[in-house]
Image 1 (cartoon, one colour):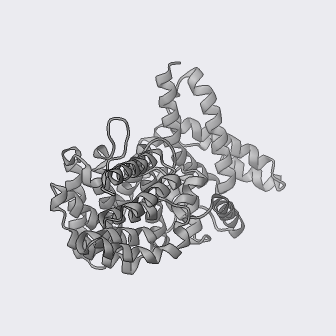
Image 2 (cartoon, helix red, strand yellow):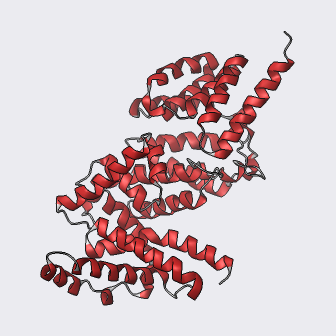
Image 3 (cartoon, one colour):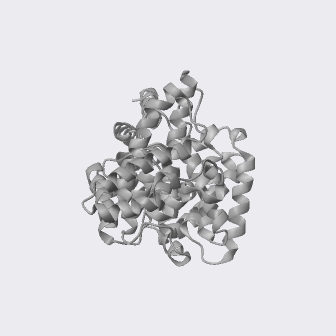
Length: 420
């Protein structure tokens, strides 16, 4: 077995996990037990596939193995007779045929996405559970996305599984009405998965392309099914317009390149055109939501051929509307940057003061990074240096940390050149 096949198998297992989990849950209706069964199937595959080669139909293979584990699970339950009756109806011979993985219209990743947004859960718990099951994010990554401690998030996910089990409500495909009710949580999940892929919370790489690409793939499928939902189109447009810059965000050694320094000839113009078309078509339809507004902001950035051509007054106006409908501190940060670009750094710094008391930003680097940038624009070299160094200490993504350290070194050098 070659190393290349090992890598292929590893990526395949990651990609297939939500599809297999969705198929097994849809068949057996017990989230916690099905998740354990799928994990056991993945362990078997990780052991056998590198030695024996990939099966002809990996998805069906994993479903069959996980289904056998579920059969064993049901046979060991106290209510043996009742459980075995279920097992007889849901036995492995009824596992999906080998070609079931081919049809994109029945992608079990999207099935699982809607199933995880269970009506027995709060929206926050549903999002956390779905990020774990569909997005494949670690508990630490999910905690970072929610701006809460990792232990808190671990408890939330555990309680979500138990709530579903205790509710007695079948874990199954939602009705059309329920699907509409769960849509907000589904879109939030895709948004968070994309963000984690576009800028990873931890590790040596700025991007996790497999996550951002999976989020775009799932958003496309949801859009195909719910084309008339403006926020679905808005989210897909936002993803396309943001991801279009990915090739220009890092240099040859993986270093971070900020938006104002990027080579815009590397931006994916075809993807930008698709994103602009989506947001242009959806904005006139009526009530505008936060994903449409963010997509519109991304479109203004992407349509500027040079950084000097950026229409900052329009971006500021859009952030003003977004800020009124969303109390996310990241929106306030970006609104402050836009304000500084239009009205000067002092005005932007004044807006940041409200975030000093926001516990969601405690221990995170972005507030210090933005404040450092605005202090530097305002001419406060000492303040900028202190904030760049603080932000670098707090950053958990290595390219972001290195960029902040580089900025601190540059400011320190410039300070040394100034006359005493």
